[in-house]
Amino acid sequence: MELARATNRSVRLRNRAALLTKLFLDGPLTRQDLVRSTGLSQPAVSNVVSDLIEEGLVAEAGAAESDGGRPSMMLRIAPRFAFLVGVDVGETRVRVELFDFAMTLLASVEYPLDPARTEPAEVAGHVLAGIDAVTGAAGVAPADVLGVGIGVSGVVSQGEHAVVHAQALGWDRVPLERLIAAGTDLPLHIDNGAKTLGQAEMWFGAGRGARHAVFALVGSGVGAAVVTGGVTYRGASSSAGEWGHTTLVYGGRPCRCGALGCLEAYVGAEAIIERYREARRGRPVPGEDEESQLNALIDDAATSATARQVLDDTAAYLGAGVANLINLFNPERVVLGGWAAMALADLLPAVREAAGRQALRQPYEQASIELCRLGVDAVALGAATLPIARFLADGGVRR
Image (cartoon, rainbow, N blue to C red; front, side, top):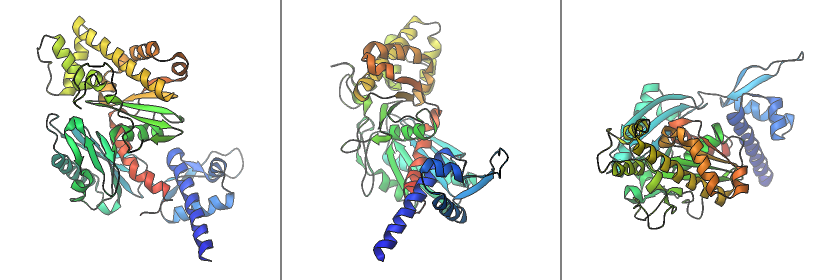
């Protein structure tokens, strides 16, 4: 009898997970839509949906258009069932955002960082201050927050508490989860920022419908998330995707990680700005921070042959890096995201051309190369999906 009850419970949780995931990603949908898309029986769908409505997880969203018969009721995830916090820990700022359960942005706050000195305790303090700021601005009680997702630079070792290894920041085995948990009781979920960007784009953006894709994050630094068979590839210790620290030029420019010739040393925003400074014979690039300096370079390219050459070289380097991704992983899509990639959006045709020169012909012809659709908020949005992904997989039952 105990075995039967356990089996019935596991089946019901699996059905709940399937229906909730479908409604979250593709809703609003009717009950009949759910029957067709999940393969569950009509009674199973009706029973689970009734439970989800009673629990406040799912809400009716009006009648579907009818061709003469009785109209079906549309169902959607209830937006106010719970709230989520997404955090983007970049190298120049910490962005904290609050979303409702339908992933509508409710509040956002940013805290600047000194890229030359990023202290873990300072980052943890900004995350905690940001959580208070966005929940306070939206009038959301902490008890109504499902969890906090955090995207960070570097390798994130998962375990009882997530530990961050980020050589470029000077972080070695930083217990970031413990630092943040000391100031909040909310559930924390920490992952690499490129991976959270990739999840956001897979769920809501340029990756929808793809089974094999690579999401490249180009900001101050460079990283990537590799999705194969619809699942993010992590490797033996979750460090897969450190694309920025693959070698582009053997013995080339020094990288912040300590190696020579890394891709990041040529196409990361910091590196692009430094190459422009060198091309200007050491004269500083105007602007108060990396974003304004990169924008100054882009503006100068309209009248300066030097600036134009730096951008042309950047497109060639980035195209070569994309070609490596195509040759290694044979993706359907390569999606370029991150604030620097968005600023350099006009280089996309040149990046495609350079990738075509370097990649093998057959996999290149199968792959599209495009910009991300979610803009600079993609890392924080993807981070906010981390607690939701766990919740959906658990059938809508809080751990």
